[in-house]
Length: 100
Image 1 (cartoon, helix red, strand yellow):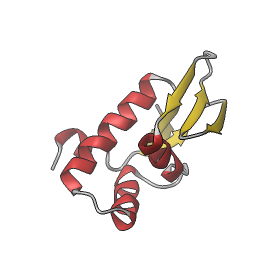
Image 2: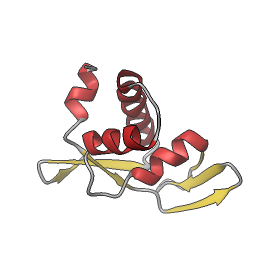
Image 3: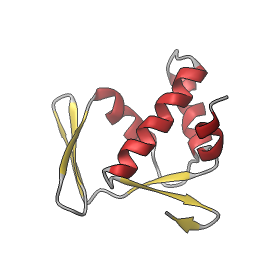
Image 4: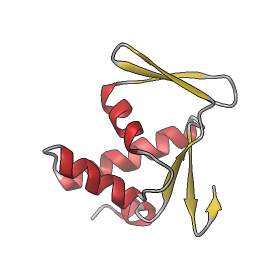
C-alpha cells in the first residue's frame, strides 16, 4: 500500500473552488486567488466524486466500483490528485473535525 495514501485515506476532501463550470472535456475551476485551472476528463471525473462527506478511502472504493482500475495505481493517482488540487487551493481536507 502506498505510504502517502495510507496517511491520507481517512481524510475527507472538500471543494474549495469559488466557481466551476464544464467547458467541453474540461472542468474550469476558479480558486480564491482568482486563478483559473482546467481539469482534464480524468480529473473532472475524480472531482465529481468529492462530496465533502466521503473519505479518500471511500473515493477509492467508489472509483474502483465504477471503473476497471488497478488499486495500487489508483491510490497513487488519488494522492497526486489531492496534492495537486490542494496546491492549487481547489480543495481542502478535513481530518479529526479540522480543516487543513
